[in-house]
Length: 174
Image (cartoon, rainbow, N blue to C red; front, side, top):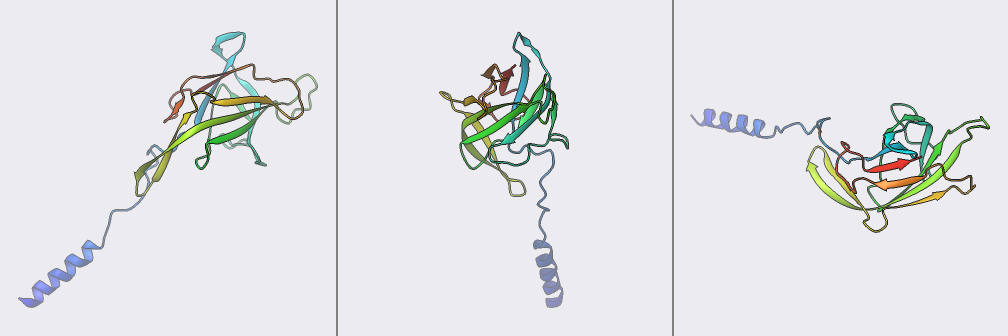
């Protein structure tokens, strides 16, 4: 009888050491990116595609990658904000790499100011960070060091709470 109890005890100990796999499901919501939609400056309700747009984080040597490319063509894009500071600066370069004199590359800089909220998701996924654009000064829009006139005509905050990627947070008119 003692041997059976000892065997059951040893068996129960071996199973108690097993634990659920700590794998973060790909569908788990993680840190959202800032969603930007581009609009026609002359027709504010019409989305407008940008052509050969590259976006560089300040101090970065490579542009943000979209679907395997650093050139973006389209009307809506998502970019990551820094999770360790409250400011992220991006260089938006339209017609990046262009040698065409009629459509030269043009760089504008937007610096985003925000507050961060770290939220525990799970042991497997860790934390995610939500952002809230600063209410009084959400961004600073400037021209590049080589002044060539801003290609971005107007920037508007559509939603200052960046908690998901299902809605536009920022509208850029050009």
